[in-house]
Amino acid sequence: MKKSDITILVVDDDPDILEILNYNLSAEGYKVITAENGAEGVKKAKKKNPHLVILDVMMPEMDGIEACEKIRETKGLENTIITFLTARGEDYSQVAGFDAGADDYITKPVKPKVLMSKVKALLRRFKANSPEKNIVEIGDIIINRDEYKIYNHGTEMNLPRKEFELLSLLTSEPNKVFKRDDILNTVWGNEVVVGGRTIDVHIRKLREKLGDAKFKTVKGVGYKFVHE
Image (cartoon, rainbow, N blue to C red):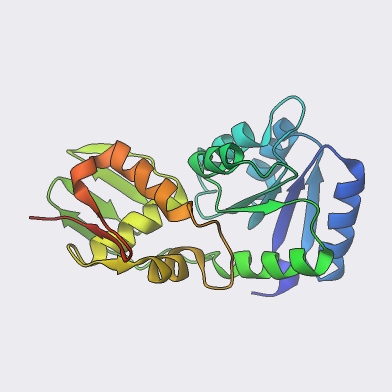
């Protein structure tokens, strides 16, 4: 996919940041659209169907967390990559962002070259085509990898993109212990630096939704999906 075919939506209430990001991303050849608040960002995401959304967290009218949730709930935007760009680096913000369905988290201020490198790495994860068509059934859980859907005891569940991909990986080989580095490389990409708690946060959310007993932590190694 050519850069000129890639649409990036930047949402931030700071006009200086919008101008800087717009300039740098456009200079790289990307198609850039901007929005000044979360509500406007959601509308433009639904209309333009961007490949990547860069969201500020603290914004008027609708903050980035809520905007992220609404974008994730929109049909057709399931594969859109969402990353937060914010000056807030507290764990709370990161956990809230991941829970809302974000793929990554970038802390301001960020140098243009660093941002461009990050954007390129994020876009490598974008899957323009549907995932490999298959349906996996493990006990009471059915995973439709083609449609990004999960059914638990017959009830459809909506999982954020990274939770889905993590579950899909772990269930690809039940009872196998996946090393933390392998999980990060497969689900998040080895070019992207994420916090050490990223996997733990996503595993915790999966445990809450699917049952604690289904996931086992192997200290110092990684995680596995338990299937009797």
